[in-house]
Amino acid sequence: LKLVQSLKTRVVKNNCNPEWNDELTLSIADLRTPIGLSVYDKDTVTDHDKMGDAVIDIEPYIECLKMGLESLPEGCVVKRVYPSRTNDLADESQCVWNKGKIIQNMHLRLKNVECGEVEIQLE
View (cartoon, rainbow, N blue to C red):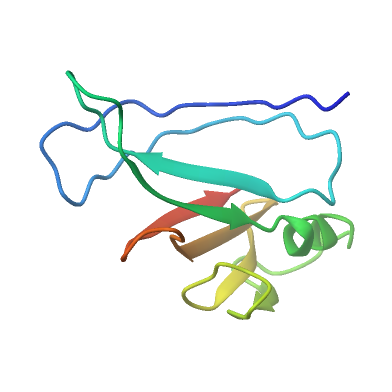
C-alpha cells in the first residue's frame, strides 16, 4: 500500500511568470523518497494543461538536519548541491543555517516541457 499526498497552491491568474509564495506542509513517511512536483495552468473550459514537472531530492536536506548544527554561526553554508544527471537542479543549491533552522533554496528545471523553471525553498 502506497499513500500519495497531493497539495495544491492557489491559482495565479493572467501571469506568464507567476509567483505563488505559498507555504505547503508535507508529511513524509520515507525520507529517501523524492517529492514529485507538477505545474499546471488552469483552464476554465478545457482540461488543465501540464506545464512540466520536477523531482525535489530531499536527501541532502535531511543529511544536514541530522548533523547537529546548533553551534554554527548565522548564515553558514552547511552543504552545496550541484546540478547533475540525477537531479533536476538548474543551478547550485545550498543548505544554510538560518535562525536556528536549515533552509535550502532550489532552482529546478521543469521536465517534459519545452522550457520552464520553478524556485522552491525547503525549511
